[in-house]
Length: 269
Image (cartoon, rainbow, N blue to C red):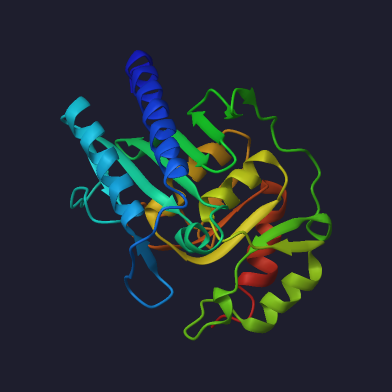
């Protein structure tokens, strides 16, 4: 992607994200219309839909040839990442949004012919914007994030870890996951995949592991984590498919091999 074009898209996206965040903050205490999607725990609110529609309107009116892959169904039906594709989660962490009114984010990843060029994760209530352009580093608001520290050890690591590995049809061996939990220094669960990616990029967590995420959950985070020297794959160490759900491991490269080979692959037939 041409650098001048990328800078223009970056600035436009940044402006729209802050506008959308301001609207959410203004309406945070308004009554919510809450529906469910795939199951009673899979929530969607009118604010998710309105925020996504805002992005659709802005993107389609400004960049007519750009495509949109988004959570609430107002985007395009994509079979590839050809062209310029915006991958948008209007509110990542909807359950937190509904019940806590905090710990949720707007996530926007912009890909050009399958390459992640621009990523934004906006912690709306704390007004913290994580951003990155490919090859230019990652930022927390206007302060550049340092590269991840050297010589990280698994037993000194803090790992973001939700509990879907306990569910039926789990992808990993439960006993090996219990070993992993005992091996690391500690685990945390924040309820927003986008924020967990941001915390890995910031270096306040060393990794984040989960069993099933959609492209809009991870598109921005992958770009931002890459820019500080982190790595992202599925739990078998394979490349993430940005058109379908994936298991996800994003982490410091020093602990990736051990997590996958010593815990995630063990016990699998």
